[in-house]
Length: 411
Image (cartoon, rainbow, N blue to C red; front, side, top):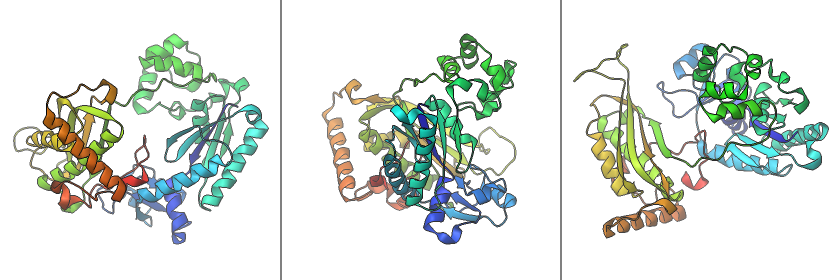
């Protein structure tokens, strides 16, 4: 064994059941806000028993499980528990990589690599997790590389422990479905099927070159080696974009209010851009509208399902300047009832590659934004903000994404 991968089971729901004992043993769904026009971002195992999965919309969840209780998400609480969980795992073995708020990987060293010792270590971690919360459970995967340890952690939930031994690979994987492989989603599975491959066993019989052709990328060749236990990681790629999106509560479902919410999302994203010491070379916005007709329509004055626009800009990370660009984009947004709004900044470059501005006013604006960041960091989120977002301060609270964990100062 080389890696131990820990996957917390129904994490958000388990934390809520820990904090609220009356929810224990009951089917609950975690939602971004209490409204019919959203989806469950997590579900307890009691709800999963009825077929309620992550991403299921509220209406469908209620059909599957009429007595499900919807609980509004508390992201700050989940991040607080995350740090306590990392500390508990570190008391047993150092955490090598935090993959997400509910996943982490640990590199095994020396005697820890022996299967009996790795198994004991996994059980110790499970017991340490109970000291953080009695309702918290995790599945653990043991394998020769991090990729396979992630797959192993997914196979036996909740509270499972699965190991892949190097001597058994790749044959030990033949019983899996293609969709069990990390990185094989619906589109990728369809492409694999298009090449006449329907099982993991058939996939493993391909050559590295054939795998590369199917994936149309070197990732296919890497996957060939990972499935056989090779221990190496993909090279780290620098972030190329960042952004935020938010489902609008009913009171903000007008074109004007949606713009204010988009501006708040932009303010948060610009602050994150400065925290990352990066600059944006482009800005975009997207709005999804409430669907009142079953078909897609085009043409002036006719409803469309979504609007999207973007533009390239001079490298920038100043909130006020970015706000001007977003307002300009918004001029082409249709006057329909919005359901969800999002913004993104792209073509990111780090400080060391940024081209300095020729205009002194730009530098002054950047310094103002930096001072605002420092004040908010010292006195709390939104201690200082631009007046344009005053009416929507309670909207678009900080959320937890799949790829990053917010700082507690962000809440």
